Image (cartoon, rainbow, N blue to C red; front, side, top):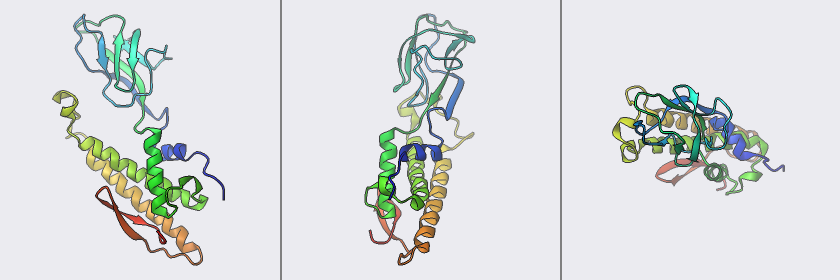
Length: 220
């Protein structure tokens, strides 16, 4: 049995959550432009691009379209400090990459996928024919978690006007639909494998995890 070489990277491909998958181009940032304030914040969590490390264009911060010097940056919180404070009426925008999930989170999604398939928590030893099902299951759990994040009232973290326009896009419903679709696909892929194996039953039983029912492969 071959060991799964890059399960985290493979799940990231399903989620389109690699290091250069999610670009935010010339996006507005938060805080006041008053000629004195030099500290600003990008909206998204887990920004990958570090503005203080001499980023290569188009990555970086721009004032009226010209690259600005960033003296300090914390990509985890999104907060950065400019060398020169922009004034009222100037346009301040930033271009950067973001990522939804940490490696540790994807590892947990894979552990749950292994348990669901019937390999306890040993996701590295999931057979090749069951890995497509494991990736879809992990993606389903990921989108469920993403939906929960957006369900949190953003006004608790940001000023109310920073919240997204719910009339334009409802991320909670959208991500839950994707999660459900991924779960159906994962179940189909898993059951197709078990039905094709002699002596294996395709009928799952159920466990409840974090308040949500999930399928578990026979023998668990």
